[in-house]
Length: 128
Image 1 (cartoon, one colour):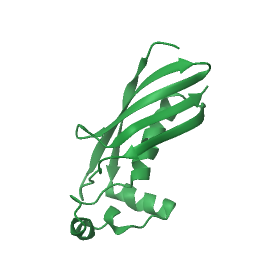
Image 2 (cartoon, helix red, strand yellow):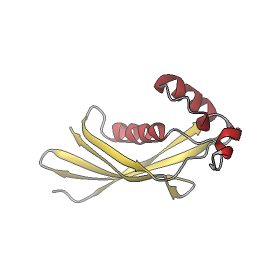
Image 3 (cartoon, one colour):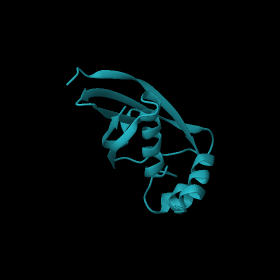
């Protein structure tokens, strides 16, 4: 097993337009991802990003660090919402630490928005 290697933090901006596009691509048209009043009405702090979209951005970071690698596994828990303002956007940051063992690289991720972790125990395993 190799010593952990810190990977360059990747930053992705999420806008409301991204949420509309993701809803169309995924078929997830839950109004909490587009309608402020509905989101507030169910107790959320505002319109939130799809959890799977946030996870996909974390996977994009893994892909940028290990281009062409086979993803053996990828998982996480959705722990905190990513609130997306009506104007501009919000940044999520994806940091990673990689260790290699028997031809597999395990990437432990830290995914945050405004300093708060938004994915719990995110981890990818890739094969180069």
